[in-house]
Image (tube, rainbow, N blue to C red; front, side):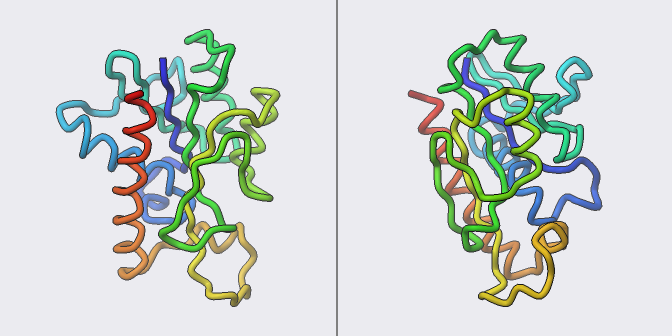
Length: 177
């Protein structure tokens, strides 16, 4: 079983924020590769889930800072001892908007959603799909936690949309192996 988690916050008010990059990527994945399927809420996993044979896509509905609760429930259910089949898609202020990196065991310097996962899983050793959301061009007036909660502007949405499509393709290639 391969599990792909997209980190974000539930609710329409967060839908177009940088912090919801994980949800955006999973939505692109669904639209491009599983258009006949739909996400549906599972209270058992505190997540919107989409399942297709040996693949589960999950968007935790616990809010970002408590994402570990949902991910831990999925890991226990699937009895995943080896987390080489766990992919977590998340926003990353260490990367420029529209860029991304897939790395095993390596995330951004500070990310409360990931800290929740690390605490609940007891490890950082899973795949991190780091989605760049920084378009401040070196101007750091706002603290990062405020910046990521802001809505994307039209140009940023275009950049993010292209990146999400590219990332969905990379993830599809990874989980199809």
